Length: 316
Image (cartoon, rainbow, N blue to C red):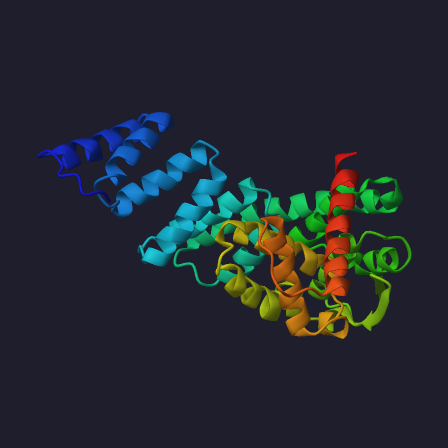
């Protein structure tokens, strides 16, 4: 809400115009009117539901999903209606696995029988889309070696998004026998972790070999590089190299993906990693330091080289 002082009766006029345009199914007009209204006033429950209905009819599913989340957090009383819009948004975005999961969680929470009956066809539609996608996915996995790296990555991401964990044996076989790109290996390990795969797999990366049980891994978001190294590197860069921090975070996150699930402290100590990255990033903007560890700097450069190699593979 802005600090603009509204003209007398402006709120009432906008309110009336929104309801009138909505009743006439002029959804583009409703969108603009609600934007004008929200610039000065907070939506009540009636207008909030009109906004959701308008977004649904305009196929603005991403905005609808976010709006439903905001309104649910606000505690608006129309829980059933908001959950229906939220699930419709998920289906519209192709997030069918999430849609089915949410419906299963709330089916006994909704207040009216009418809402419960509306959820069943939404679930059946989402499940049918998952089943259709499962068939297409099985065909893609059968010709995995003919796909380029980008297609392989997108396929594994799709498996995760749609919860197709029944393909875990296939992914485990491909990971052990067919995959060379380290970032794809990491993504496949995450899939197997989510799938609860509990059979040891040997992973070779950076001339290091490690045996892991996927469902015992902490996951990509909890690697030593992300939790222990990156925050301290950022602290160092804030002293004279603020303009490179965003790029540094992006680069180190990509390095964390490449190195997963290796224990990076078996390669170099925590302090060596921190100093190495500090020198590496500051040198990119012409800042010289007294620290100089050639071995780890060469290793960091090799990680970046692999990122660039994967980038050019993705382009081709």
